[in-house]
Length: 465
Image (cartoon, rainbow, N blue to C red; front, side):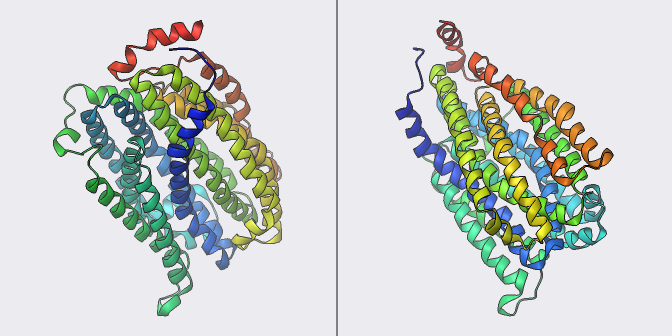
Protein backbone atom coordinates (compact mmCIF):
# COMPACT_ATOMS: atom_id res chain seq x y z
CA UNK A 1 0.00 0.00 0.00
CA UNK A 2 1.11 3.50 -0.70
CA UNK A 3 -0.12 6.58 1.07
CA UNK A 4 -1.28 8.88 -1.70
CA UNK A 5 -3.88 11.54 -2.28
CA UNK A 6 -7.35 10.61 -3.46
CA UNK A 7 -7.30 9.26 -7.02
CA UNK A 8 -10.23 11.33 -8.25
CA UNK A 9 -10.64 9.41 -11.52
CA UNK A 10 -11.12 6.11 -9.68
CA UNK A 11 -13.27 7.81 -7.04
CA UNK A 12 -15.66 9.42 -9.50
CA UNK A 13 -15.94 6.19 -11.48
CA UNK A 14 -17.18 4.52 -8.28
CA UNK A 15 -19.53 7.44 -7.68
CA UNK A 16 -21.07 7.19 -11.16
CA UNK A 17 -21.35 3.40 -11.34
CA UNK A 18 -22.36 2.61 -7.75
CA UNK A 19 -23.15 5.73 -5.70
CA UNK A 20 -25.45 7.64 -8.05
CA UNK A 21 -27.80 4.69 -8.81
CA UNK A 22 -28.05 3.93 -5.09
CA UNK A 23 -28.61 7.61 -4.27
CA UNK A 24 -31.32 7.85 -6.93
CA UNK A 25 -33.01 4.68 -5.66
CA UNK A 26 -32.92 5.98 -2.11
CA UNK A 27 -34.31 9.29 -3.33
CA UNK A 28 -37.19 7.56 -5.10
CA UNK A 29 -37.96 5.36 -2.08
CA UNK A 30 -38.13 8.39 0.17
CA UNK A 31 -40.12 10.29 -2.44
CA UNK A 32 -42.74 7.53 -2.35
CA UNK A 33 -43.14 7.99 1.40
CA UNK A 34 -43.31 11.79 0.99
CA UNK A 35 -45.91 11.74 -1.79
CA UNK A 36 -48.67 11.40 0.81
CA UNK A 37 -47.80 14.71 2.48
CA UNK A 38 -47.50 16.53 -0.85
CA UNK A 39 -50.72 15.22 -2.37
CA UNK A 40 -52.71 15.73 0.82
CA UNK A 41 -51.81 19.44 0.66
CA UNK A 42 -55.03 20.26 -1.20
CA UNK A 43 -56.99 19.08 1.85
CA UNK A 44 -55.60 21.93 3.97
CA UNK A 45 -53.06 22.53 6.74
CA UNK A 46 -54.85 20.21 9.18
CA UNK A 47 -54.40 17.16 6.93
CA UNK A 48 -50.78 18.11 6.21
CA UNK A 49 -50.09 18.39 9.94
CA UNK A 50 -51.79 15.03 10.61
CA UNK A 51 -49.75 13.16 7.99
CA UNK A 52 -46.64 14.95 9.25
CA UNK A 53 -47.25 13.66 12.80
CA UNK A 54 -47.68 10.13 11.43
CA UNK A 55 -44.39 10.51 9.56
CA UNK A 56 -42.69 11.26 12.88
CA UNK A 57 -43.95 7.93 14.24
CA UNK A 58 -42.60 6.21 11.14
CA UNK A 59 -39.27 7.95 11.74
CA UNK A 60 -39.11 6.50 15.27
CA UNK A 61 -39.89 3.08 13.80
CA UNK A 62 -37.06 3.57 11.30
CA UNK A 63 -34.66 4.48 14.10
CA UNK A 64 -35.54 1.30 15.99
CA UNK A 65 -34.83 -1.13 13.14
CA UNK A 66 -32.13 0.68 11.17
CA UNK A 67 -29.43 -0.48 13.57
CA UNK A 68 -29.86 -3.98 12.16
CA UNK A 69 -30.16 -2.69 8.60
CA UNK A 70 -26.98 -0.65 9.01
CA UNK A 71 -25.22 -3.63 10.57
CA UNK A 72 -26.29 -5.85 7.70
CA UNK A 73 -24.81 -3.35 5.23
CA UNK A 74 -21.49 -3.56 7.09
CA UNK A 75 -21.40 -7.37 6.91
CA UNK A 76 -22.83 -7.62 3.38
CA UNK A 77 -20.21 -5.27 1.92
CA UNK A 78 -17.23 -6.76 3.76
CA UNK A 79 -18.26 -10.36 3.05
CA UNK A 80 -18.82 -9.37 -0.59
CA UNK A 81 -15.29 -7.99 -0.76
CA UNK A 82 -13.96 -11.25 0.70
CA UNK A 83 -16.19 -13.47 -1.49
CA UNK A 84 -17.90 -15.09 1.53
CA UNK A 85 -21.39 -16.06 0.31
CA UNK A 86 -22.26 -18.07 3.44
CA UNK A 87 -21.54 -15.02 5.61
CA UNK A 88 -23.92 -12.96 3.47
CA UNK A 89 -26.66 -15.59 3.93
CA UNK A 90 -26.24 -15.68 7.71
CA UNK A 91 -26.35 -11.88 7.87
CA UNK A 92 -29.55 -11.78 5.83
CA UNK A 93 -31.34 -14.34 7.98
CA UNK A 94 -30.41 -12.86 11.35
CA UNK A 95 -31.15 -9.30 10.24
CA UNK A 96 -34.54 -10.36 8.90
CA UNK A 97 -35.56 -11.93 12.23
CA UNK A 98 -34.70 -8.84 14.28
CA UNK A 99 -36.16 -6.32 11.82
CA UNK A 100 -39.45 -8.18 11.40
CA UNK A 101 -39.88 -8.41 15.19
CA UNK A 102 -39.61 -4.61 15.48
CA UNK A 103 -41.95 -4.08 12.51
CA UNK A 104 -44.62 -6.31 14.03
CA UNK A 105 -44.37 -4.46 17.36
CA UNK A 106 -44.83 -1.03 15.80
CA UNK A 107 -47.43 -2.27 13.35
CA UNK A 108 -49.52 -3.75 16.15
CA UNK A 109 -49.43 -0.49 18.14
CA UNK A 110 -50.35 1.58 15.08
CA UNK A 111 -53.28 -0.66 14.17
CA UNK A 112 -54.72 -1.38 17.63
CA UNK A 113 -54.04 1.79 19.63
CA UNK A 114 -53.26 4.71 17.29
CA UNK A 115 -54.74 7.38 19.58
CA UNK A 116 -52.23 6.60 22.32
CA UNK A 117 -49.14 6.78 20.14
CA UNK A 118 -50.37 9.93 18.35
CA UNK A 119 -51.09 11.57 21.70
CA UNK A 120 -47.40 11.38 22.55
CA UNK A 121 -46.54 13.67 19.64
CA UNK A 122 -49.28 16.29 19.81
CA UNK A 123 -52.01 17.59 22.09
CA UNK A 124 -54.17 18.81 19.17
CA UNK A 125 -57.31 16.62 19.14
CA UNK A 126 -58.34 17.78 15.64
CA UNK A 127 -54.98 16.63 14.23
CA UNK A 128 -55.24 13.25 16.01
CA UNK A 129 -58.74 12.69 14.62
CA UNK A 130 -57.49 13.07 11.03
CA UNK A 131 -54.30 11.06 11.68
CA UNK A 132 -55.91 7.94 13.24
CA UNK A 133 -57.22 6.27 10.03
CA UNK A 134 -53.97 7.06 8.22
CA UNK A 135 -51.58 5.54 10.77
CA UNK A 136 -53.87 2.53 11.29
CA UNK A 137 -53.56 1.56 7.61
CA UNK A 138 -49.86 2.42 7.33
CA UNK A 139 -49.17 0.10 10.28
CA UNK A 140 -49.82 -2.86 7.96
CA UNK A 141 -47.03 -1.61 5.66
CA UNK A 142 -44.31 -1.67 8.34
CA UNK A 143 -43.27 -5.35 7.84
CA UNK A 144 -43.16 -4.76 4.09
CA UNK A 145 -40.91 -1.76 4.61
CA UNK A 146 -38.24 -3.62 6.59
CA UNK A 147 -38.14 -6.57 4.18
CA UNK A 148 -37.81 -4.24 1.20
CA UNK A 149 -34.96 -2.35 2.87
CA UNK A 150 -33.09 -5.54 3.75
CA UNK A 151 -33.36 -6.96 0.22
CA UNK A 152 -32.40 -3.60 -1.23
CA UNK A 153 -29.32 -3.39 1.03
CA UNK A 154 -28.29 -6.90 0.00
CA UNK A 155 -28.51 -6.03 -3.68
CA UNK A 156 -26.70 -2.72 -3.23
CA UNK A 157 -23.88 -4.37 -1.29
CA UNK A 158 -23.36 -6.93 -4.03
CA UNK A 159 -23.34 -4.14 -6.63
CA UNK A 160 -26.73 -4.96 -8.18
CA UNK A 161 -28.07 -1.43 -8.10
CA UNK A 162 -30.48 -1.47 -11.06
CA UNK A 163 -33.15 -3.73 -9.52
CA UNK A 164 -33.79 -1.56 -6.42
CA UNK A 165 -33.91 1.48 -8.73
CA UNK A 166 -36.55 -0.13 -10.99
CA UNK A 167 -38.66 -1.31 -8.03
CA UNK A 168 -38.57 2.18 -6.49
CA UNK A 169 -39.72 3.80 -9.73
CA UNK A 170 -42.66 1.41 -10.13
CA UNK A 171 -43.61 1.73 -6.43
CA UNK A 172 -43.55 5.54 -6.73
CA UNK A 173 -45.81 5.44 -9.79
CA UNK A 174 -48.21 3.07 -7.98
CA UNK A 175 -48.32 5.32 -4.92
CA UNK A 176 -48.94 8.45 -6.98
CA UNK A 177 -51.74 6.92 -9.07
CA UNK A 178 -53.55 5.37 -6.09
CA UNK A 179 -53.23 8.58 -4.09
CA UNK A 180 -54.71 10.58 -6.96
CA UNK A 181 -57.64 8.16 -7.19
CA UNK A 182 -58.35 7.61 -3.49
CA UNK A 183 -57.55 11.00 -1.93
CA UNK A 184 -59.78 12.87 -4.37
CA UNK A 185 -62.31 10.11 -5.19
CA UNK A 186 -61.64 9.67 -8.91
CA UNK A 187 -63.31 7.06 -11.17
CA UNK A 188 -66.25 6.62 -8.81
CA UNK A 189 -64.09 5.68 -5.81
CA UNK A 190 -64.92 7.20 -2.40
CA UNK A 191 -63.10 10.41 -1.45
CA UNK A 192 -60.93 9.06 1.38
CA UNK A 193 -58.56 11.96 2.07
CA UNK A 194 -55.66 10.99 4.36
CA UNK A 195 -56.87 7.38 4.58
CA UNK A 196 -56.65 7.13 0.78
CA UNK A 197 -53.02 8.22 0.92
CA UNK A 198 -52.35 5.45 3.46
CA UNK A 199 -53.88 2.83 1.13
CA UNK A 200 -51.59 4.08 -1.65
CA UNK A 201 -48.59 3.69 0.65
CA UNK A 202 -49.58 0.15 1.62
CA UNK A 203 -50.19 -1.07 -1.94
CA UNK A 204 -47.00 0.55 -3.27
CA UNK A 205 -45.09 -1.23 -0.49
CA UNK A 206 -46.48 -4.57 -1.68
CA UNK A 207 -45.49 -3.76 -5.28
CA UNK A 208 -41.97 -2.71 -4.25
CA UNK A 209 -41.33 -5.89 -2.24
CA UNK A 210 -42.71 -8.22 -4.93
CA UNK A 211 -40.49 -6.68 -7.61
CA UNK A 212 -37.39 -6.83 -5.39
CA UNK A 213 -37.91 -10.51 -4.57
CA UNK A 214 -38.53 -11.28 -8.24
CA UNK A 215 -35.16 -9.76 -9.18
CA UNK A 216 -33.43 -11.39 -6.21
CA UNK A 217 -34.65 -14.90 -7.00
CA UNK A 218 -34.17 -14.52 -10.74
CA UNK A 219 -30.56 -13.30 -10.55
CA UNK A 220 -28.74 -15.76 -8.30
CA UNK A 221 -25.44 -15.64 -10.21
CA UNK A 222 -23.71 -13.34 -7.72
CA UNK A 223 -25.27 -14.37 -4.38
CA UNK A 224 -27.79 -17.17 -3.86
CA UNK A 225 -29.88 -17.17 -0.70
CA UNK A 226 -30.14 -20.58 0.99
CA UNK A 227 -32.55 -21.21 3.87
CA UNK A 228 -30.09 -23.55 5.60
CA UNK A 229 -27.28 -20.97 5.57
CA UNK A 230 -29.59 -18.09 6.52
CA UNK A 231 -30.37 -19.64 9.90
CA UNK A 232 -27.05 -21.34 10.78
CA UNK A 233 -25.70 -19.08 13.52
CA UNK A 234 -24.17 -21.76 15.77
CA UNK A 235 -20.54 -20.87 15.04
CA UNK A 236 -20.54 -17.71 17.13
CA UNK A 237 -21.71 -15.55 14.25
CA UNK A 238 -24.63 -14.09 16.18
CA UNK A 239 -22.25 -12.80 18.87
CA UNK A 240 -20.02 -11.09 16.28
CA UNK A 241 -23.08 -9.74 14.47
CA UNK A 242 -24.62 -8.25 17.61
CA UNK A 243 -21.30 -6.77 18.72
CA UNK A 244 -21.31 -4.68 15.53
CA UNK A 245 -25.06 -4.06 15.29
CA UNK A 246 -25.83 -3.09 18.90
CA UNK A 247 -23.77 0.14 18.83
CA UNK A 248 -25.55 1.12 15.59
CA UNK A 249 -28.89 0.09 17.09
CA UNK A 250 -28.24 2.15 20.21
CA UNK A 251 -27.21 5.07 18.02
CA UNK A 252 -30.40 4.94 15.96
CA UNK A 253 -32.66 4.18 18.94
CA UNK A 254 -31.36 6.98 21.13
CA UNK A 255 -31.33 9.29 18.13
CA UNK A 256 -34.97 8.38 17.51
CA UNK A 257 -35.86 9.08 21.15
CA UNK A 258 -34.03 12.42 20.96
CA UNK A 259 -35.90 13.35 17.81
CA UNK A 260 -39.16 12.27 19.46
CA UNK A 261 -38.51 14.69 22.32
CA UNK A 262 -37.80 17.43 19.81
CA UNK A 263 -41.00 16.54 17.91
CA UNK A 264 -42.95 16.73 21.18
CA UNK A 265 -41.77 20.34 21.48
CA UNK A 266 -42.73 21.06 17.86
CA UNK A 267 -46.13 19.38 18.37
CA UNK A 268 -46.92 21.96 21.09
CA UNK A 269 -46.37 24.92 18.75
CA UNK A 270 -49.09 26.68 16.75
CA UNK A 271 -50.90 24.67 14.07
CA UNK A 272 -49.31 26.79 11.31
CA UNK A 273 -45.87 25.95 12.73
CA UNK A 274 -46.72 22.21 12.87
CA UNK A 275 -47.91 22.33 9.24
CA UNK A 276 -44.76 24.24 8.20
CA UNK A 277 -42.63 21.64 9.98
CA UNK A 278 -44.45 18.82 8.15
CA UNK A 279 -43.77 20.51 4.80
CA UNK A 280 -40.15 21.18 5.74
CA UNK A 281 -39.65 17.55 6.78
CA UNK A 282 -40.71 16.51 3.28
CA UNK A 283 -38.19 18.86 1.67
CA UNK A 284 -35.53 17.79 4.17
CA UNK A 285 -36.44 14.20 3.39
CA UNK A 286 -35.63 14.74 -0.27
CA UNK A 287 -32.21 16.13 0.65
CA UNK A 288 -31.65 13.35 3.19
CA UNK A 289 -32.74 10.73 0.67
CA UNK A 290 -30.09 11.77 -1.81
CA UNK A 291 -27.20 12.11 0.59
CA UNK A 292 -28.46 9.10 2.56
CA UNK A 293 -28.19 7.15 -0.68
CA UNK A 294 -24.66 8.44 -1.14
CA UNK A 295 -23.94 7.39 2.44
CA UNK A 296 -25.19 3.87 1.71
CA UNK A 297 -23.08 3.85 -1.44
CA UNK A 298 -20.02 5.01 0.49
CA UNK A 299 -20.63 2.16 2.94
CA UNK A 300 -20.69 -0.34 0.08
CA UNK A 301 -17.53 1.04 -1.54
CA UNK A 302 -15.57 1.50 1.69
CA UNK A 303 -16.76 -1.79 3.24
CA UNK A 304 -15.81 -3.75 0.13
CA UNK A 305 -12.27 -2.32 0.13
CA UNK A 306 -11.78 -2.83 3.88
CA UNK A 307 -13.13 -6.39 3.69
CA UNK A 308 -10.71 -7.16 0.85
CA UNK A 309 -7.75 -5.69 2.78
CA UNK A 310 -7.36 -2.57 0.60
CA UNK A 311 -7.45 -0.23 3.59
CA UNK A 312 -5.65 2.78 2.12
CA UNK A 313 -8.03 2.78 -0.82
CA UNK A 314 -11.01 2.70 1.54
CA UNK A 315 -9.45 5.49 3.59
CA UNK A 316 -9.11 7.64 0.47
CA UNK A 317 -12.72 7.00 -0.54
CA UNK A 318 -13.94 8.27 2.83
CA UNK A 319 -12.10 11.56 2.36
CA UNK A 320 -13.60 11.91 -1.11
CA UNK A 321 -17.17 11.25 0.03
CA UNK A 322 -16.74 13.61 3.01
CA UNK A 323 -15.96 16.43 0.56
CA UNK A 324 -18.41 15.56 -2.21
CA UNK A 325 -21.62 14.97 -0.25
CA UNK A 326 -21.72 18.24 1.76
CA UNK A 327 -21.04 20.15 -1.47
CA UNK A 328 -24.01 18.45 -3.15
CA UNK A 329 -26.21 19.16 -0.13
CA UNK A 330 -25.29 22.85 -0.16
CA UNK A 331 -26.22 23.12 -3.85
CA UNK A 332 -29.56 21.33 -3.34
CA UNK A 333 -30.46 23.50 -0.33
CA UNK A 334 -29.51 26.65 -2.24
CA UNK A 335 -31.86 25.66 -5.07
CA UNK A 336 -34.58 24.92 -2.51
CA UNK A 337 -34.15 28.36 -0.94
CA UNK A 338 -34.28 30.08 -4.35
CA UNK A 339 -37.54 28.30 -5.22
CA UNK A 340 -39.04 28.19 -1.72
CA UNK A 341 -42.41 29.69 -2.65
CA UNK A 342 -43.39 27.20 -5.39
CA UNK A 343 -42.00 24.31 -3.34
CA UNK A 344 -43.85 25.24 -0.15
CA UNK A 345 -46.91 26.12 -2.24
CA UNK A 346 -47.32 22.40 -2.98
CA UNK A 347 -48.54 21.84 0.58
CA UNK A 348 -51.43 24.30 0.69
CA UNK A 349 -49.86 26.31 3.52
CA UNK A 350 -51.19 29.64 4.79
CA UNK A 351 -49.13 32.84 4.78
CA UNK A 352 -47.72 32.36 8.28
CA UNK A 353 -46.67 28.76 7.57
CA UNK A 354 -45.10 29.89 4.27
CA UNK A 355 -43.06 32.49 6.19
CA UNK A 356 -41.86 29.84 8.63
CA UNK A 357 -40.97 27.45 5.81
CA UNK A 358 -38.78 29.96 3.97
CA UNK A 359 -36.60 30.70 6.98
CA UNK A 360 -36.44 27.04 8.01
CA UNK A 361 -34.87 26.29 4.61
CA UNK A 362 -32.45 29.17 5.12
CA UNK A 363 -31.34 27.79 8.50
CA UNK A 364 -30.98 24.32 7.02
CA UNK A 365 -28.71 25.61 4.25
CA UNK A 366 -25.90 25.78 6.81
CA UNK A 367 -27.05 23.13 9.29
CA UNK A 368 -27.88 20.53 6.65
CA UNK A 369 -24.51 20.85 4.94
CA UNK A 370 -22.68 20.18 8.21
CA UNK A 371 -25.08 17.38 9.10
CA UNK A 372 -24.39 15.67 5.76
CA UNK A 373 -20.67 15.63 6.41
CA UNK A 374 -21.19 14.10 9.87
CA UNK A 375 -23.59 11.48 8.54
CA UNK A 376 -21.29 10.37 5.73
CA UNK A 377 -18.28 9.99 8.01
CA UNK A 378 -20.26 8.02 10.60
CA UNK A 379 -21.59 5.69 7.87
CA UNK A 380 -18.05 5.05 6.69
CA UNK A 381 -16.89 4.27 10.23
CA UNK A 382 -19.54 1.56 10.40
CA UNK A 383 -18.56 0.17 7.00
CA UNK A 384 -14.96 0.03 8.22
CA UNK A 385 -16.02 -1.97 11.28
CA UNK A 386 -16.08 0.81 13.92
CA UNK A 387 -19.61 1.36 15.23
CA UNK A 388 -18.90 2.77 18.71
CA UNK A 389 -17.18 6.13 18.23
CA UNK A 390 -19.83 7.69 16.00
CA UNK A 391 -22.61 6.33 18.22
CA UNK A 392 -21.22 7.75 21.44
CA UNK A 393 -20.40 11.09 19.86
CA UNK A 394 -23.81 11.54 18.24
CA UNK A 395 -25.84 10.50 21.28
CA UNK A 396 -23.78 12.53 23.76
CA UNK A 397 -24.02 15.66 21.61
CA UNK A 398 -27.74 15.11 20.97
CA UNK A 399 -28.73 14.69 24.62
CA UNK A 400 -26.34 17.24 26.14
CA UNK A 401 -26.71 19.99 23.53
CA UNK A 402 -29.52 19.73 20.97
CA UNK A 403 -32.41 18.20 22.95
CA UNK A 404 -31.97 20.32 26.12
CA UNK A 405 -31.52 23.51 24.08
CA UNK A 406 -34.65 22.84 21.99
CA UNK A 407 -36.73 21.80 25.02
CA UNK A 408 -35.76 24.87 27.05
CA UNK A 409 -36.34 27.18 24.06
CA UNK A 410 -39.79 25.77 23.30
CA UNK A 411 -41.22 24.48 26.58
CA UNK A 412 -39.62 26.77 29.16
CA UNK A 413 -38.74 30.07 27.51
CA UNK A 414 -41.49 29.83 24.84
CA UNK A 415 -39.29 31.49 22.24
CA UNK A 416 -40.60 32.18 18.72
CA UNK A 417 -40.92 29.07 16.58
CA UNK A 418 -37.98 29.81 14.26
CA UNK A 419 -35.67 30.23 17.26
CA UNK A 420 -36.86 26.87 18.61
CA UNK A 421 -36.24 25.30 15.20
CA UNK A 422 -32.68 26.66 15.00
CA UNK A 423 -31.74 24.98 18.29
CA UNK A 424 -32.47 21.53 16.76
CA UNK A 425 -29.13 21.58 14.93
CA UNK A 426 -26.88 23.09 17.61
CA UNK A 427 -24.93 19.85 18.14
CA UNK A 428 -23.76 19.39 14.53
CA UNK A 429 -20.76 21.76 14.57
CA UNK A 430 -19.32 20.10 17.69
CA UNK A 431 -19.62 16.66 16.10
CA UNK A 432 -17.94 17.89 12.93
CA UNK A 433 -14.76 18.89 14.78
CA UNK A 434 -14.37 15.50 16.44
CA UNK A 435 -15.31 13.47 13.35
CA UNK A 436 -12.84 15.24 11.05
CA UNK A 437 -10.03 14.42 13.48
CA UNK A 438 -11.14 10.78 13.87
CA UNK A 439 -11.52 10.28 10.12
CA UNK A 440 -7.96 11.44 9.51
CA UNK A 441 -6.65 9.10 12.22
CA UNK A 442 -7.80 5.96 10.34
CA UNK A 443 -8.61 4.25 13.65
CA UNK A 444 -12.10 3.40 12.38
CA UNK A 445 -10.75 0.64 10.10
CA UNK A 446 -11.58 -2.58 12.03
CA UNK A 447 -12.31 -5.40 9.54
CA UNK A 448 -14.52 -8.42 10.27
CA UNK A 449 -12.94 -10.56 7.51
CA UNK A 450 -9.66 -12.47 7.77
CA UNK A 451 -8.38 -10.78 4.61
CA UNK A 452 -8.97 -7.37 6.13
CA UNK A 453 -7.50 -8.19 9.54
CA UNK A 454 -4.26 -9.39 7.95
CA UNK A 455 -3.56 -5.96 6.44
CA UNK A 456 -4.44 -3.69 9.40
CA UNK A 457 -0.93 -3.40 10.84
CA UNK A 458 0.58 -2.55 7.46
CA UNK A 459 -2.06 0.12 6.96
CA UNK A 460 -1.32 1.67 10.37
CA UNK A 461 2.39 1.83 9.53
CA UNK A 462 1.74 3.40 6.11
CA UNK A 463 -0.59 5.96 7.65
CA UNK A 464 1.96 6.96 10.29
CA UNK A 465 4.67 7.19 7.64
